[in-house]
Length: 256
Image (cartoon, rainbow, N blue to C red; front, side, top):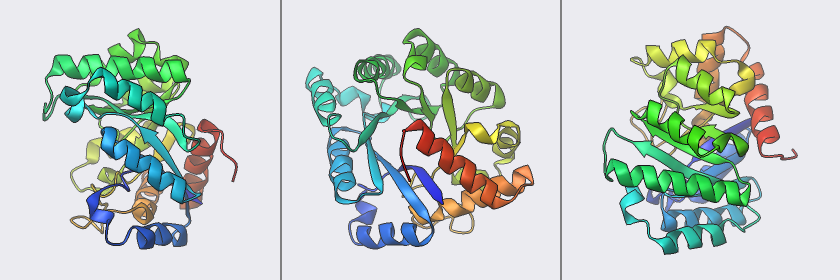
């Protein structure tokens, strides 16, 4: 059994064959998929998709790239969306100082407000952090995010960041980047993180792992990430599959 802890099944890249993509995931033993919103429109679509398939869950939130578009009405709409039985988290939310498609000060404010919303709703959070490691941790601490915990998605930091996140009750989710030739740093981090704290994800349709790099990513390809983690840790791939799946099920209080 496998779990894809972070996908974007609402993406237009799946409009032609979404059913087939989800079927292939099942054939690859991917039994749960968390599809994640990046703005209000995508969050609505994520919930719609989750309601259509029993094995798909949804997270709703606004990505830091979209932070400049957030109004008070957006927070209200996210709160209302979160009432769906298929919504299990607020996300993806956080900071992205690499591309800075929204001003940093707005990113910070929107991140804080969405953590506050998650605490109000007693939902965990899905964190996007790119080249903003210190500030991300500082905001999580100051907003008491440890009370709801969450997932550091597509982890891009060092082991010190991972340790601080794990100390707050967060899981570390590893994407297909771990298979990239130049990702030695991430493989070094994965080597140190206990299996009990790891999740695997695709972030599809982006970041397809080797040997699918350059193609559209999809949930079935999470198998390659799990295999690479097993190689890094010098353990059987079944142990990685079992641990990451159990972590996901336990975190979201799910039954097989």
